[in-house]
Image (cartoon, rainbow, N blue to C red; front, top):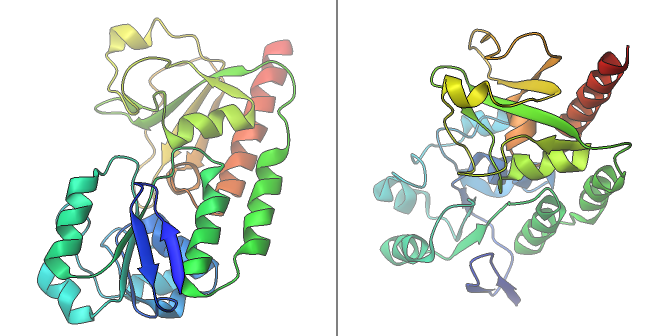
Length: 258
C-alpha cells in the first residue's frame, strides 16, 4: 500500500506501484526515465522530448488541452505532472473526468528536484535514492564571493526574462548570482526603457533547439548562452545547467576585475 501526499496537499493511495503512467509535463517524463521507470510511461505530452525514447510515446496534448479520449485509450493507472501554477480545482476536474488518480508536483526551488525524484521512485517502486543524493550534492556547494547581478533572457522579441519566485530564479541564487529582476511576475515582459535601468554583470540567453540565435538586448557586458532545458526543467540535468551558470558567473567576475 502506497500513501503519499502531492504538492497540492492531495492524498494519493495506491495498492501497488504504478505500472501504466501518463506524464503531462516534460520534467516528469524526463525524471521517470532518469529513475529507471521509463518502461512504465504509456503516454506523454507534445513537449516531452527528452530522453530520445520519450519522443516515441503516444501524445495526449498537454495539461491545459488534454485529449480525454486519448487518455482513456491508454488506460493509465496514474497521471503525474509538474506545474508551479496549476490549481487544485483543475486537477480535481481532470481526475474526475478520466477517473484516474492524479499526482501533482510543484518545482518552485532547485531543492525540490531530489525530493520529487524520490516521490516518483515511491510511486513506481524504483529506487531514486542515489540519483537524488547526486543532485543534492550538486546543490550543496556554496557559492563563492558576493552574489553577481544577472539577467536571464527567455525570448528577445517580445523580451521576456526570468523574474522573482521562479525555479530559475532560485537556481541563479544557488549558482552564486542575484537576479536583477526582483519584483513582478515570475516571467515578466520588459520594455526597452525598463531594461536600460538594469545593471547586470552577466547577461544569460536561454537557447532553444532549432531556433536561430537571438542577439542580447543589452550590449557591452559578459554574455552566456545556455540551453533553456538545462535551466528551466526541474530534472537531474539541472546539474549541468548549474555548472554552466556558475562558470559564466565566475567568468563575469574575472572580466570585471581585469
